[in-house]
Image (tube, rainbow, N blue to C red; front, side, top):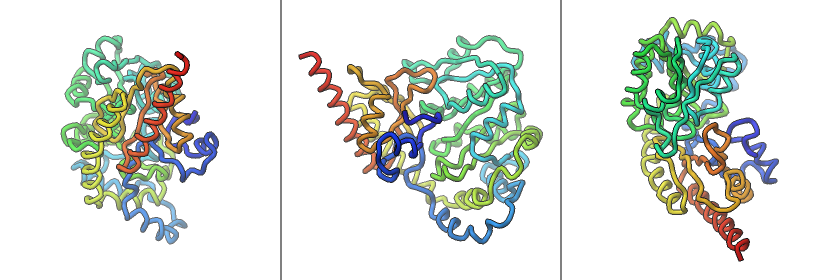
Length: 370
């Protein structure tokens, strides 16, 4: 099982499982921008030796100033963190909810953070027949009345790739709920301005928006994310944060990549072309693909004897292609996988390996019936 530690992208485990070096895998199990880091990152690494002997800015002022200008909000409304995972954990600790509503399937870190503070979970089970879309009806049918409603929602959601409509979140807020919206993959959405709630979070003390910088800029080794809420809420979160949580290299890279408009445009152009192409090819192989608004797709495998996500992961791994077994997400059965969307030549490798594996499972089925 590649998800030994709960996430994709674990190349060390892949090496141990399949007996080949990490650089010989094509990794579809983690959802990084396949263009690789912007050129600035390489230059920053080369010059970083001159600064490594100095403490990082404890307030991360340079990056906060750039993000404030980008979003048109006050710097005091922004907290920089050691990746989105730290900010999820900090928010749950600060709010300390009695019950947390989660829409399953969702990012496992939500549940992990909630369990750490012994909060209960009110599950909202998203339905495959509805494309795993979060609707008002789903919320009303699956949650019980709570004095202080608290929701953690992904938009786009991981692993489904579905956006949550802002009107639904606004309705929850108007009803007295506190809402955390994880927008870790929002940068990949061309209509970001229509769906992101960053600006609204800066003026609403019951709304928290979390953003990641590692996925879009392909820098997962540099843990970097940020949170937006009112100055009062951000100040409370900062009191819980470990000093120097964000190292100086992350701060330098974070400031630099925000200036690369050409990289952002190239990324959106690539995804606009590649996502529909890959979805069409996957459907041509008999897989059911959940509509996605971001850089990964959730698929359901065709019904074949012995074909499960775990079995397919093993067969694909032997061929040097890593995929995510999505059955580990609450609410999904053993027929679901998640694939990142990569560059065309890598996507073709995915499709070739998938076709081979599916043919093998079909052949095994025929042999057993003869």
